[in-house]
Amino acid sequence: MTEFLQQLVNGLAQGGIYALIALGYTMVYGVLRFINFAQGDVFMLGAFAGFYLGPTILRITGSGPSYLGAALVLIAAMATCGLIGVVIERLCYRPLRSRPRITVLITAIGVSLLLENAGQLVFGADPKSFPELITDRALEFPVSWGSLSALTITLSQVLVVGVTLALLLILRQIVRHTRIGLAMRALSLNPTAAQLCGINLDRVIAFTFGLGSALAGAAGILISIQQPSIDPLMGINAGMKAFVAAVLGGVGNLSGAVLGGMLIGLTEALVVGYLSPTYRDPIVFAVLILILLFRPSGLLGRTEREKV
Amino acid sequence: MPRSNLIFFGVLLALGALNPLMGTLNPYYYDILIGIGINVILAVSLNLINGYTGQFSLGHAGFMAVGAYTASWVTLHFGASSGIPGPVLFALALLLGSLGAAVAGLAVGIPSLRLRGDYLAIVTLGFNEIIKGGIQNADALGAQRGLGGMVQYTGFFATFACAALTIVVVYNLIHSTYGRGFIATHDDEIAAEAVGLNTTRYKITAFAVGAFFAGLAGGLYAHFKQFIHPEGFGFMRSIDIVVMVILGGMGRMTGVCLAAVLLTVLPELLRTVSHLESLPEWLRRIAENRMIFYSLLLIVLMLARPQGLFNFRLPFTRKGRSS
Image 1 (cartoon, rainbow over the protein chains, first blue to last red):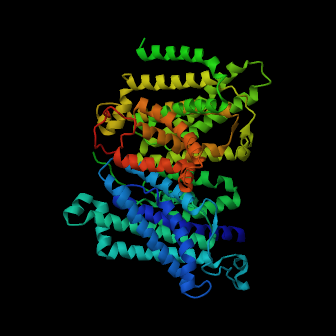
Image 2: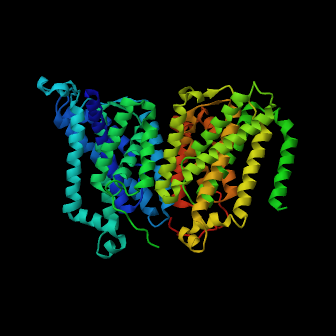
Image 3: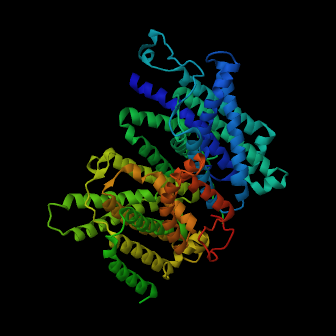
């Protein structure tokens, strides 16, 4: 029982990372109807932004790891990645907006490969050890909790789930209660009509890309606090898993992305715990194929009718 | 007899005549030459799926893996014990490998009925990972250790005869009355269905035939290198083939063949460049990493020349279609 609960805890912490990246996929898909393949690599850039900015920020906030320092690094990485997302959209995707979707898809794959390989060139291909932002430790539980007290839950795991949920709530507020959020929803319903109502298409799309990339950047910092070894190819696997999570939850649906992320994290943890780590990737992709076959709109998504 | 078939037999004769000369070739160049032949098969077969039929498969290396492992298993199991002569056994192994890959192609083609564009790309990529994962867990196929010990049956004649066969089959298929349906499916699926074409069947056929030849390439590859490893059939290998098709121009036979040749030779050239002492250090480091070139090529091509680099004639499709 304890082992099972332990796997659930590990799964949720990993799922939070997937959920944050999946939110970016979902938002961009909602507005542009296209999968930003580079999302996973922006996640990697977030981790490297933390790697390079972290020591400086820690020096300014005073010596040693602290919550304030960690929060500042998180914000700095989110800002960096948001900016990178906007630049990628401006340079690579905006000129192609009226082209066939396959062209944009190929470009997105190109951007993803470029970030991975330029990353290897600039940062070096070997894994780097991430600076310690907070002192990670296992939480202690009272003995009276019975088998629960044997669980190992680390501070960073709690942080990942907490920050994920907090960012989801902020995101929901932005989408539901701000003017730009209204514009995003309008655009995802009907781009032409939205433009006729005076919505600036370019600005809203750039904002969406920035927001999605910032979330991936946050995920990059959070994973590095949990597993402080980062390398330029870390985004490939995480990006694909997050994509599966977005599809599982229903592409275009914010809560769905988080639900999907958590479910994929749990599935992975259970497969690793009870089967074998070598089955982890094949089973996640099998989940994707089954979902697309039997419920293509995802768990929480709406079905869209195709019109001629 | 159609002209393309006459050319095909002419090419076979020429290959047979050239074959003895190849033994004298420098082993390094011979290696590249066989690589070209295998890549041409892969690129032309993927072109049937991604180019002519307008689907987007990112899992071609998976089909190649099925062919490579099936063919190797056959030659390893029946090699010494049975009295079957080598070439016959090899031909049989290649055929079985290709058929195995075609079955895998059917398995991927069927879900593709409901998906298009980005989703299809991800699902084929997923299938590629599932095939790779299956091999990594199959002890009979060497699992994580890789599979070795195959006899080097693949030679110059076998490789290029197979390449010529692939080209002529795909060419004839596309130019037959039946085959026009592939292009119709690519151009406008709804319109094609409205005039009574069974687009579903075209898509599945494209996947099965494309996978068949990818499996053939896999069998040739395994019996040339004499060692195969699941990591060699991953996502990156699939991307290699996709880049060939895109660079050559999706749906252009000649362009795709040229691109396959270029992209087999290019990494070797880049390797030579990266060893030139006279060049600055950063340039040499970039030259070491061919994927940087590939990715930049993809982005710049899509921005500036989406019809492909070697696509000289006007594309047969209308511009501005959305799919």
